[in-house]
Length: 256
Image 1 (cartoon, rainbow, N blue to C red):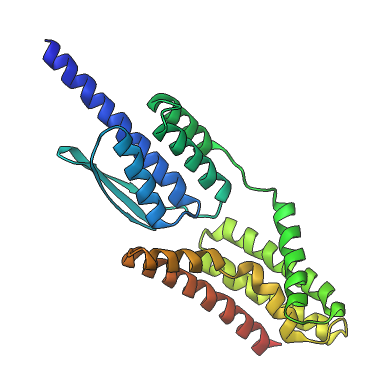
Image 2 (cartoon, rainbow, N blue to C red):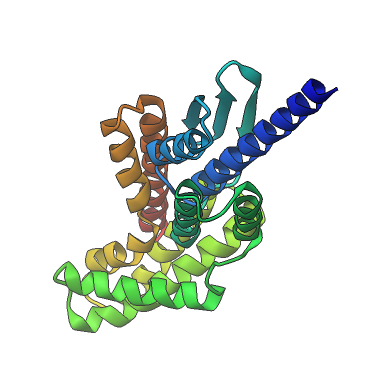
């Protein structure tokens, strides 16, 4: 009777560790963490509990198992975005757990709160930041100060189109394509009306908020860490974004 009770308790404990590791990896992967960092964090959490694990992480799935125990678990990642604040919070929770400051139940509770939270900035603030960044990028690329206003407006309109198109279609490629088309049309209109002079600098500055800088960085970091599948996948994803932006600008230039 005691043996059965102990076995059931051990099984429940292992299940809670698996849930903790999978939730840790899921939140990190959904919010822009590198693949090797996700695997490393999950492994450290499990090793803190004296468990040997095997994990395989790609940008779209996590496969995880505890050595010699239980069945292999699979978590599908369907939604991905960039929220580094969540990644930082999960890193902090995992460090507190590994150093013994919190137990499994507290760590799970904290992770569930992070997963359910909506830390994203308001839409108006995202659009304002994208517009301001567009004007700053134009100046950084040696554009004229008088072209900064057209870049600010076209960058803000382009990012607005991106946000609302993505909300409707839920396909990032098309959202980036239509945003680039809008940027091209607005930039050409400004220059045609005499409110800007350097069309190329205005367009380049305006599309910069759409450039996949984080994906490219993560792809290189994953490739350097030996995660060839994940690194290649993220590189192709960044290439598709570049193709969508370039295609949108080319379409707008050809029709106007």
